[in-house]
Image 1 (cartoon, protein in one colour):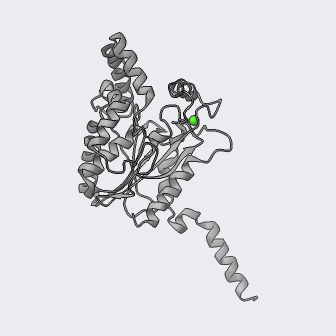
Image 2 (cartoon, rainbow, N blue to C red):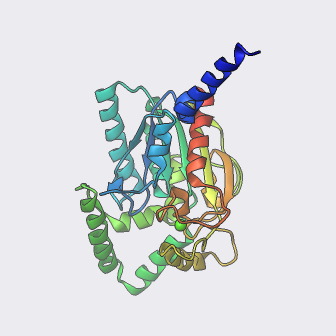
Image 3 (cartoon, rainbow, N blue to C red):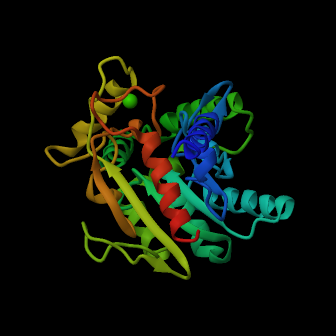
Length: 306
Ligand code: CA
């Protein structure tokens, strides 16, 4: 017993010296994880990551992580082609065979496009708060602009905004706000899903196939709106929520619209930006930590051999 004690102390000291993640490789997936932003999104502007605190948490657990940049505003297919080019570049540069794609919001459509046209490059598709069946917020904006004939004016203003977001994050990708808006309407998303149905739920609020073309499909969604009084972005999402009447939503995306493939959970108490741990980690008290979700999901992918 007395001889064993020093060994036990040494073992404990080793545990303390190494971070838990380094010991376990908890997020160490076989294939790299690629984070794909949504509408008006970016990879990083200066020190501000779109995916607040998420890439570093995944890397600390052993994952290889890439944060890509698509047009802040453009059609699903245009953004998808941009992502495809980026994945091909990463494959050529580093020899990666496949990628685990995680898309937030419009990023969900983007990664579905890539999985459809290049399934050999994709191990898994995970959407977070993506309006797969469209968003009534986009429907209402489209109807208001079409009704007043002001689409062109609004689109040019939003293109300028998207261009600023792009420029601040070092991108000169083309911006087309009207195409983005059309992609995210109920009609536009239904058309997209007709052409790219892999993982589509069997009914409006059901589950989709777990595996299509050897690609795994997962989704999550949120149903919080005003979650933190200190977060200025909550006000925008509160306005967005008005488009939903009494149906559950995250401020921009309805609960059922977020469902795709294997639905891990569609009612996290998060709003649309809490889903990427914004702004700056501000979310509701006592709500689950979004970073912990991304870590546990990476572990799920790892356990699945992905
Ligand atoms: Ca928030």
